[in-house]
Image (cartoon, rainbow, N blue to C red; front, side, top):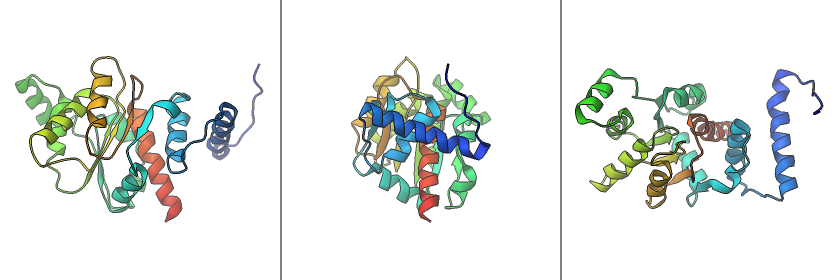
Length: 213
């Protein structure tokens, strides 16, 4: 039986990250310095160490994402769950706003008329935002597919994609589409992911920026 640790609330997260670091050391896993806070926060959120193998970062992804948020980029999610999970106060401190169009009436109406998903329509609307946008996709592979297809039709492309949808239908294929683009990304290969993972990636960067400020 595991020993119960008596910790104050503010000590729990710190201890959790210590345990994660200890476990990684036991497994002989050394994460790249710039990726370390993000991958560890995803593990903290999921208790799943597989992310050390499946979480993929494009070249200079972390620094690019930091610069975008530091300069006021918005974050668009594909679920209100991810939206709720992002530290919006921290993001607002850098001039950015977290947004999700999924619950809007016009999105439901357009999706029904076009026989497509609300996630796809949401991405179309988000592509109209004139400032830099980081897309944090944790649920809908159709959102990633829509982003890929929108890029293919013209000169528009997102500033950054966090592609971590979870599931079985089109999930792996949608992620692979993003890996083939020249858009900076953090993508989790395979079936795993989720809105909580998308939010965790965003928060990891926000917290690192707050430390650096």
